[in-house]
Amino acid sequence: MKLLKSLMCTIAFIIATPCVVANPLFDGADPDILIENNKYWIYPTTEDKAKKEFFVYSSDDMHEWKKSGPILEAKNISWIEKDGAPLHELWAPGIFKHNNQYYLFYAVGPQNPTPSRIGVAVCSTPDGTFVDSGKPLITGGTDFEAIDPMVFKDPASDKIYLYCGGSAGAKLKVYELNDDCISIKQECPVDTPKHFTEAPFMHMRDKTYYLSYSHGAWNSDTYGVYFATATSPIGPWTFRNEILKTDKHHAGPGHHSFAKDPTTGKWYVIYHRWNNAKTNDKMPEVRSVSIDAVEYDTNGIILPITMTD
Image (cartoon, rainbow, N blue to C red):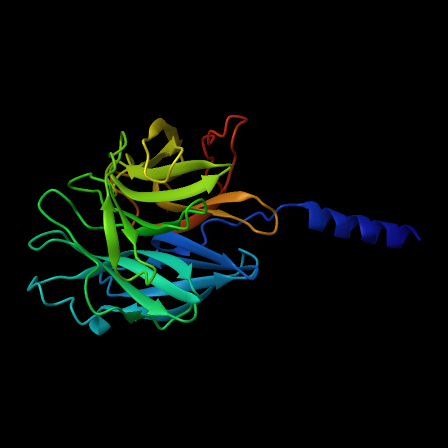
């Protein structure tokens, strides 16, 4: 009987204890996440010098991760070479599910000598292979860099918004998409919030809209995450504070996404960082993807996030 009681107590403890993730998860940057059917899918920028393809990492428990792909390759994007630029790289994938289809939004850079562009590819499964729509969705300009797309469906209106922009122009843009998710219905007038550099992300909690974004130089320890709140998905924004920043062991955390675990109701932030911080005035060779818990105070303000290992 004592053994049975001990076993029952152990099982109860395991069920009640939240999942503790062993960071970092894997090499990569700019991660976006999809959660469905108790499975986690993370889509990062490939952390190598070529950056010509995307992969996806999947897990049932946030501990063991399986790499699949490539799910999209630059060589299969018909329009990518048409601008005549000598170099093209794939950055910052953003995943969105709608009408039982999966849409992978991504940036093609760099900005010079031709403007950066945002494309979208489609697949009936989350692990690819994704097929590009056949043309750029957005093309940047002299005062706007078309990078870092993320898509959010407003539960209050069912409108689908694409958030993007940043870096050199440090300018936020928001577009409403058509139901096909591969064409734009209209651009939405929106202010650029304080300390915005790039990588916007929108999530909603208790009727509050949270616009979070990266600030600082992506390849330095100045990189961090700030956020603003609003009563609508397009502002006006109330600037809040910084929630992720360099500490003694991790440098340059940023380009993140938020996700709510459907089983526990717990919120998490998924982001990239350099581990072992900065040594000899140099950043480490590669960035890695990590997940940490998010807490809100009684007024709905996101508390500073502690990076863990």
